[in-house]
Length: 109
Length: 117
Image (cartoon, rainbow over all chains, first blue to last red; front, side):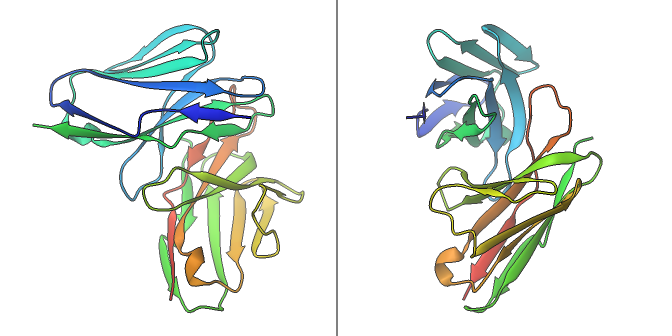
């Protein structure tokens, strides 16, 4: 079956760095997405990886290892506004997104 | 660019009534739109995939006669919750993929919070 695993909740300190891991198993693979979702709002796109390696976008970076079925989202210089749920989603061979349950990130001062 | 709107943002209705939710891509054409439902503290659950001009593809366990989807144009899809019941209360979110996008990225609407009394 198809499955996405990511931690349920993580806590980090303002100004620090946090890494949110995601492992996936899908029928075929057409890329890995990370979305940010604040409480009561819709998800917003953060990143897309389809090739192995690290993609950096400002304070956020995303890494993919296709052979390991593994990705992580790295958030640097954490700000209070980064408190949100982070959703990992893998696209299968039918271009359908398989969603993880999300990781709730709590930022403490 | 790539803005998706939803209307209404929230709706309260009586049990047994029908509710229509609109999803519009404002600055791009979307051959494919997706409808999701999200219960509190849970992840997104895909309900159906809607392609312009054809019937929607429903996920297993989603009643197509209860959740009517129409994708009449490249910028508009509607979800109608028929004979709504309290258990249908949820956050409904649509997303759209721009036609010809490189990696089928989905842009999400702001969501519609439905409360059925």
